[in-house]
Image 1 (cartoon, rainbow, N blue to C red):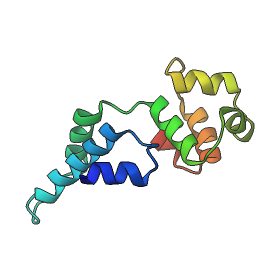
Image 2: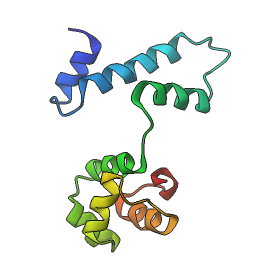
Image 3: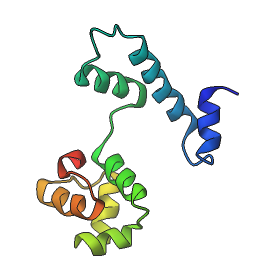
Amino acid sequence: MNVAQKIHKELDKKADLKLIKKVISLYEKLKQEDDDELMSYDDAMEHLNDLLGEVTAADKVKAFRGRENMTQKELAKKSDIAQQHISEIERGTRPVGVTTAKKLASALNCDYRSLL
C-alpha cells in the first residue's frame, strides 16, 4: 500500500485519493529542493494550481464550512447572509466581495482574505 492509499484509508475515504496524490507530489518536489534555496510561496502556489487547478472562492468557502462542520443554513444564520446567497457563492455563481468575505470569515474562524 503506497503513502497516498494509507492516508486515504486513515481519512476514512472522505478525501479524494487523486487530491492526496497531488499533494504528496508537491511535498516530494519540495523535499527534493536544495535546502539552501526553498521554493517561494508563488512557486509553490503555481505548482499547486498546475496540479489541482485554480482554487476558487467557491472552493474555499466550501472547504472552510466543511472544516467547521456547518451546514449552509447554519453558516447563513451565523454570518447573517442568506442561505441562497451562500449556495450561489459555493456554486460559483455569486462573487465574494470584501464585506461578504468578512462576514463569512467571522463565522468560519478564518482570515477574510483567504476567501477572496
